[in-house]
Length: 263
Image (cartoon, rainbow, N blue to C red; front, side, top):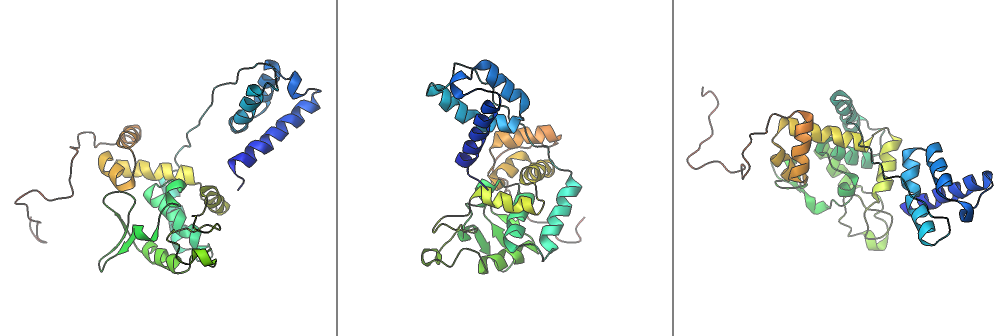
């Protein structure tokens, strides 16, 4: 996956070629040329080339022009049935690389962006006699089977651990550069190659969580901003708007759990 700088350079070269095809150069390019280019290209290309064009303008390589505002489209969440089908595939298909099975499951189950997934360390994973926990926020989230088994298999066989300086690496997903985690763009490409749309999957996961639990609880457990979680809950039609915030992880004084068989 190319870096942001590489993508900008590639798009800038394409823009220069586009000018040449029309008998123009940067020096003769003005508002008409900028408008024509944006009319012929999609939104992603327009956003990608923006920094290049701003640099050209600041360096006075072009005539004065105004750029259209940045457009950011929000990925629509995938249907819940599709998300569950992808989770099942990641958990059960042994032909898939173990790294993408674990990373993709974290995205689709816990609504984590790849920028956070790659920052996870071995210290974020704990195992007790009763359960495995993954610290994404507070409190740590339970890891169900068979994901827990896959997670520890991956920890024992992580890639990029052969260099001398990486032997003690604590990253859950080590990168090729010593001491650094895998880059989010690289992990995104690996997941995309097996048909996992990370943004749509993460959006579907967080929407499902705020439908099933109060937004403040989801925000704390999954490290989302409370305002963001509340907004998502409202958009998804959540029914937890009257939930009282505060520490709900401790039982109230004098409370005892009901025994099996009690009415």
